[in-house]
Length: 144
Image (cartoon, rainbow, N blue to C red; front, side):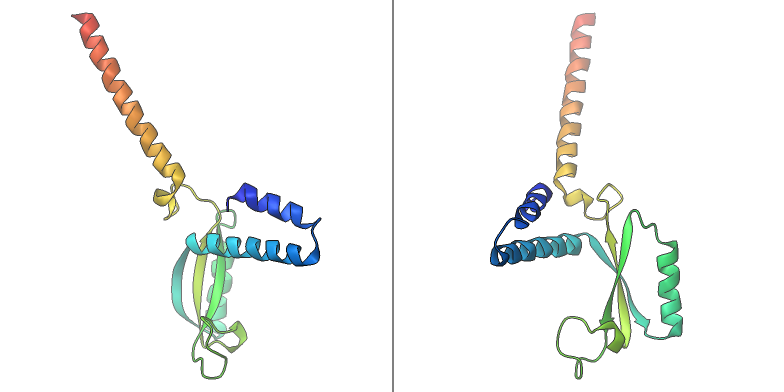
């Protein structure tokens, strides 16, 4: 689902019956979750759940470029007590994993080379190179 279709679906959800509205909003949140999952880096693991660990996380958040990145924490540790989900609630975690999400997808992002924009950019560069070769060839013919 593209961003435009997502925004349109959310706008339409305000005028829907409650059961349809819930389904559309669930689709929107699933789309947002998938988008974030594709644009993040599993940056650090094993940050301890201690004063030192929390001080480290506070400093990371303080100096992070907030216009470009955001930080997510996921709890890690024993799942014997707190269930078998992929992460543990932060208050019960022994350690944390730090994820850094990219808000802006440009040439500095790791997933940029897989994007449609990059593919079009490369096609454009190839066409421009071919046109330059033709111009050079025509200039050579004109000079002779």
